[in-house]
Length: 381
Image (cartoon, rainbow, N blue to C red; front, side):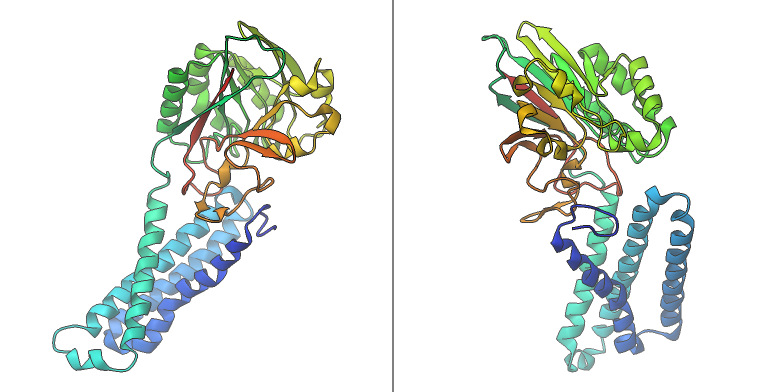
């Protein structure tokens, strides 16, 4: 489902609209119904603040929709949080006035339970919204996932190939430097033979790539690094971003196949272009000596399901979806801009084996819920 320009939106996300309306207008209902409990000055202050927030929302749309669209979703989330926090404060004040000493007879009026329930609901909503916006990370730490998998044909017995897969830094959009430090720690502890980067180095500005300069220099000092470009990279300047990565010692694969030789034998890696590139094709797989034994690195995991059957690789490794970034029990990610069956970790969908990493950064909102940033480590044995 497509909603507000986002593809792969879960139908449950439609429930956010009535919830938002309830939270935003719930305070107005309380003020209308129980405003007599407040002083005229308090009622006037509430109305002025609410009017100011409405003006801010309109101004945000006018300014950001024409120049800084990347911050539009974040700005509206902040305005919405301000609405619910204001309503939570209103509910708390009304609750205190309703049950203040000396007003006990008032507590027995009809509607007491409805008033209490509405006030608690608004207060809980406000506290939850403030907590979510104030704690961007799921746990504040980058996690490491380790997967062991029998290697493709052509590998030698007795020596595993160790791969660290990282993706989606989105530098320039609230990328915590401590995430990069923690990710480096996981990579060093795993001691990979090769490192793969799945694209989306930057969010919107080319200059933001310098935020990750020390990070990539440390990666290339650890092991050979291979990368592909993501859709955000291609929106900006794919040539410049590829050249910058090469300057950091990274091998950027744009429709190329390379042989990874070592004690494990020989494994072929095919780096496919992003779907947003004009020259997208499966030429790299066609150039592989044996596509069925090849590894594919591509930003968008949906590509794995588009590869023609005769070229189907042994494993496709991707990022792009951030694992949903904001996930709920029983629903998963509210947004998954690929096939919803492709989840973080190792998946098999329609007979295609896909390894998906949730990435390290943010996009849209600087929030991760039940989907922490991750370094995905793979051992082929």
